[in-house]
Image (tube, rainbow, N blue to C red):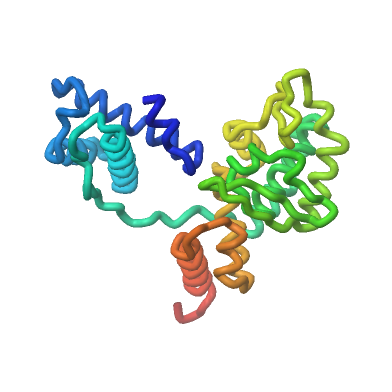
Amino acid sequence: MGEFTRSLTGLADATVEAYRRDVGAFVTWAERAGLAGPEGVDRLLLRRYLAYLATRRYARRSIARKAAALRRYFAWLRHRQLINADPSARLSAPSGEARLPRVLSPSEAASLLGGPPEAAQQADAVRLRDDAVLELLYGSGLRVGELCGLGPDGLDLDRSTVTVWGKGSKQRRVPMYELTVAALQAWMQRGRSHLAGPETPDDAVFVNRRGRRLGPRDVRRILDRRASAPTYPHALRHSFATHLLDGGADLRVVQELLGHSSLQTTQIYTHVSKERLIGVYGQTHPRA
């Protein structure tokens, strides 16, 4: 399995981990069915497995991803000549409806960025870090993995830009607004040194209380402390895009800022904006 996951170049770490789990789950299921190795797998067995997942009430999008992982795995086995034929060729699963992402209202975003209640104030260094993390996620639309992997050389505070490596090892430069720059300056100048320790990597902008590079779980804990309702880090990226479109930004500009390779991926945010528009209309128009 290790060789297969190492072959998944160009994919995000989270995708590689999901594919590893998906293929591992299939191998376990196949072994229970009496198969000794991949050479005994045929197309019918794969379709039975997808049907089994449906009976286990997996979401259609999850089944579609698992099918994609299996196609990648068996294509790799065929390329390595470990099997004579690829049983997953043209294997498909219904992708299901795309779920509209949760978007914070402007007032929710303002409350989140405004900080925790006075009774829940953290130590100064932690507060400075949390402020910078949230301002960057919402103000520049970074993925949580991009933020956690950010190094000091990716920050250009004089020019108000941040450079990150996104999915597929693609680099992009994103602007930052004044409040984001100010929050980062405060963290880098007055906060980071108080949390850094012997194990702190030099190329990590954000670190946790143990001095190690900040991870996605750490970011989720920040949101748990600061948000008034359950909020995932990716919701700030969704809100960044939707609020830009609500304000009249061009869809292709938003595509570039998000680092989407396809405009179709960005278009989901136009649906979110329409849903919000319909909601406002229904609540305010006297004839609605």
